[in-house]
Amino acid sequence: MKSRLIAISFCCFLLNCENEPLESSTNTNNNPGASDNFVPSNGYWVYDVNSTSEFDSEMNFTATDSVYVAEEFEDYFSLSVNDDGLANGSMNMILTNGNLYNSPRKLVFDGSIALPENLANLGLDDFILSNITLVDLDAENEAFMYFQDETITNTFDIQDIELPIDLSYEIFTSKTNYYDTLNINGDEYLNVFEGKFIFSLSVTGTFTLFGFPQTVSILEPQNIITTSYYYAESIGLVRAESEQGFELSSELSSILGLLGVEIEIPTSFSIQNVEQLTEFELN
Image 1 (cartoon, helix red, strand yellow):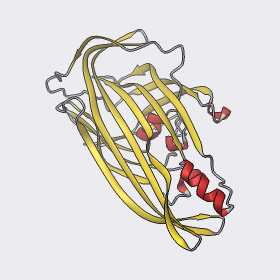
Image 2 (cartoon, one colour; image 1 turned 120 degrees about the vertical axis):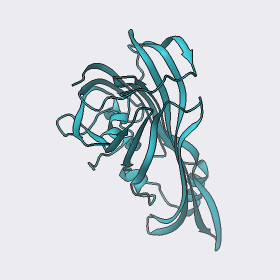
Image 3 (cartoon, helix red, strand yellow; image 1 turned 180 degrees about the vertical axis):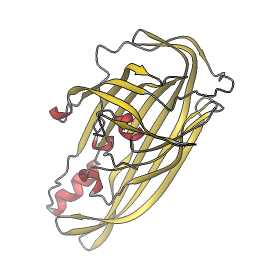
């Protein structure tokens, strides 16, 4: 499995003025009958990627991702991007960091999410995603297709202060809708599945203040990744829209101020993104 740094490092992309709204001529919860190839496991796909962030000028860019099938086996396949390089797009970062299991009614992913240094310092390692369902033609609207949650106990060092922390997260996918036809940026697609991927996180820490332990919120419960994605039958991923970011709690800033400790990581960050299919060829 190839290692990729995912978008919690907030490499994500802008819904800019060139992106037209999605328009559906038929918006229904009725999923299609069985398909032998709802998501193809061959060919290549080219995406325009647009990124913006008011917090980091380096995240304001446009780029291209060229995605292709790297290996294909009897029941799964893997993707690579940009001549075995790194993806510029958030969703493509995920998809090229694992294996995809394709069946007539489901697309399932095994992979991992790696955190950047500023959040990894909280004691987080890679998040392993096992059997995460991205497409399920039998799911109802708003139904969970995958759910994973856990609370992790760890320690976090702040200027030689070893701080016990409890970290709780939820990772889930859900079905948003199914469209007989959907217009995306002027292109008409048939049989489009819309899903959502969410990664939410909260962190609390225990400080000793004036000789007494005090539990303080470091990260209030919040979605640090929200991605809406669209798969068109017999084509694959045609669009992904992401909002990603975090905000440390004001309670943390107050308690650190009392302790005379200066926090060395950003207190907030956000990026928006779009990956839009512009070209594809299926073998």
